Image (cartoon, rainbow, N blue to C red; front, side, top):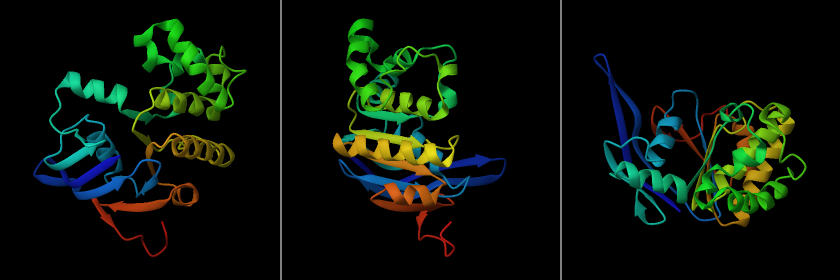
Length: 226
């Protein structure tokens, strides 16, 4: 599970203070899907980076499965991202020329190539990619590429999955398909999922609840629902 308490991250640009994250408290329980929506520049990506241990907060606590993410050494932060955290990246991050099965099994390679690929095949099949394992990135549709990245994120059965704009480059049909798959797999595996998006309409259909962020603070939804 994810637990944030009064998390703060400010930046100084020139003489101005940028309140990227300004006292955010948020929790996501196992098997729960929480949407985080807000406009560009609202603090969504900074919050994801803090949860992933890529940046330290100025203050506040961030815990995943009861363990603090704040103040980890580089090696422990790397181990946390490998074993406890799944990050669903965007399709353009896939390496050109790589085969689907190789891309999806990257986090399992510590077990050896053969074991990694044997373990990832059932997950790729569950995602509807059983016949696309040997296809290269360029031969996959954008929706198929996103499903490869979902397999990569879930491959080590993480406690928490972060999805930062996972459907930003997908059409409406692929968006629905990917979000339905992502929600279903996380709920089935009892993983906490934080789904970050500016697409409120789509997020509302697949999240158990939605939090809104603006100017670094959680807030009430805007009157127009956007």
